[in-house]
Picture (tube, rainbow, N blue to C red):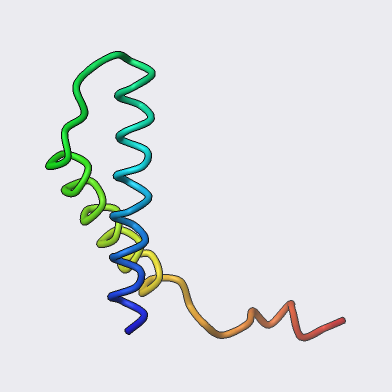
Length: 63
């Protein structure tokens, strides 16, 4: 479920970002490009979360 919600929020945020940027630049808004960028961003987030370890570092245990 967390993967689905991450995908939904990423796509929604990319659609919003694409709309705002296209309005600022005065170019036509392209939904397809925003959707593709949202999916790519989601995949990158999943890859980064898989690479980062969940265990605390040994230095964090010495308070």
